Length: 333
Image 1 (cartoon, rainbow, N blue to C red):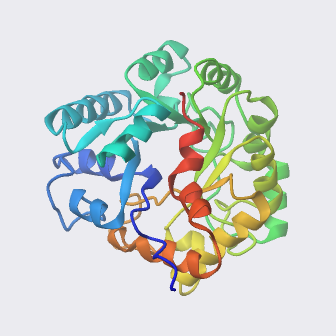
Image 2 (image 1 turned 120 degrees about the horizontal axis):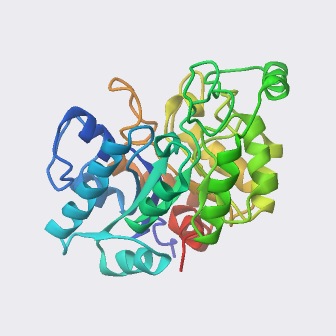
C-alpha cells in the first residue's frame, strides 16, 4: 500500500515574511485577502501553499512607519475575524492551525528606531510584537547610524572562509543598549532573532542572552558561501541553546548558480544533520527580495518541498516540526 502524501494538510509557519512592510512602503493596501500579482503572496496563494502562520515584519528603522504597520495589522485582523487571527502566544498559533485561519504574529527587524530607550521596546511588546531582532544589518560604522545596536555594519555577499574569518576578527559587535534589550526580551520570554547580526555580535548574543533564540531566515554556509548563511559551528551553537534556524527561499542564499528545489532540500537536510530535527524551520523572506527576484519556491508550491523531503525519508512528525512546531515552541505560552 503506498504511503499517504506528505503534504496532506501540513500547516506552515513562515518565520520571516516581508509582505506587509513592502505594501506599506509602496502605499498599497495591507489587505492580504486581495490578490495582487505585484507580490509573491496573498491569501489565496497562502491557502494553496498550506500557510497557517506568518511572522510578519512590522518595522526596523522608522518608528512612525512601524507604528502605522502595527495599527494596520490590528485593523486587518479585526476586519477579517473568520480568516485571520492576530497571534500573541503559542496558544494563539495552535488555535490558528486548529481553526484553519491565517495567523499573523508581528516581528521587528532591528531596534535602532528605539533610539536606545527601552521604554519604546516595552511599548512595542505591549502592542503585540512577539519576536525581535537587534539589527537589520545597520551599524554605527561605517554608515553612521547613531542608534544601531552593533558597532560595525554587517557585511552582505559571498565570502571565502578566509575572508569570513578576517571579517569576524576585525568586526566589533554589540553596543551596551543591545545587552539591555536582550535582558528585557528575556524577561518577557520574547525570542531574539539573530539574523542580520555581524558575526562578532552573533557570538556575543549567544554568550549573553538568557531568553529564546532563533535565526529566522538564512541557509547553510557549507553549501553556499554567502555571509548571511551560518557556518556549521554557528548552527551547532544555536542548537545547543535550544534555538531554531529558518531556511530562506532567497535564491542567493541557496546557490550561486541554479538555485532550485533540490538545492533548497539539500540545505534543509544539512541543517537537520548538523542541528537535529528540533532546531530547523523555514523563513521564506517572501516579498523581502528585489522586485525582479523570484524565490526558489513560490508560495503555492510549498507542498512540493514536503513531498521532496518525505521522499528523502523524513517522517510526517519531522516535517511538522520543520513546517511549524519548532518555531512555535519558542513563543510565549
